[in-house]
Image (cartoon, rainbow, N blue to C red; front, side):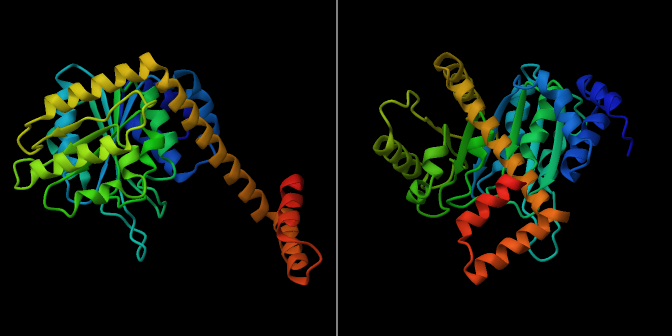
Length: 315
């Protein structure tokens, strides 16, 4: 792989698919050039509208994503897609098969689709997702769609990475009240009842609306709508896109967009700082100090909190 970083960055800004793909590979591999790359892209970040798409396996996330790509491209927007697949806890591999459902966009130069393995990272995303989003932002994407792995009730990291979060449910896939557990209800800006042509769709919509009404904070300012779709036929996708546009307009008008992006940057900086500290503690003198601190804790010469504070101050 070429390590001519300025040329790759320039190519990405011009929308060259090969350059974008190489930069994302550098980020995923944790290459030494990543800090310089992020510094180069810092001035062009924050232009894309990031849309997170999450839900249980089988609700139609990839099909919804494909339908949204079609709708957004009809408006002339340039689209980036990150499709995150779970990594096997046994082999470490991932199928990366989401692009199979998006074949109709494979030859569209205005669409860049990247499958990523979670690499064991919990929360529904890959650990490098924030940096990859910066690459796609700098590449001129008007919107970036993040499709998470099939999440359960607590893997809600997409809400921290996206400006607008879509939570998908489907009739006949369990009690929809499960959506109220452990944060799933709280992260949704828009709820989508996909496969709404199935029996039970009316009940699912009704239960979701009731739960949203019960949990609606009066100072939130945005009441999540519940949209019906049949993604396989495109039914309801225009209504969904209109809801996404309404939410984006509210984010800007209320100042919530700036607040969310500050929180996102804070989380990213914190994660990077912790990673730097961990690397220092695992290498050379840092590793020796860590071992010595552990021995002091075991023998009772010092407590774990004091030992940790000393390590951080010396790192």
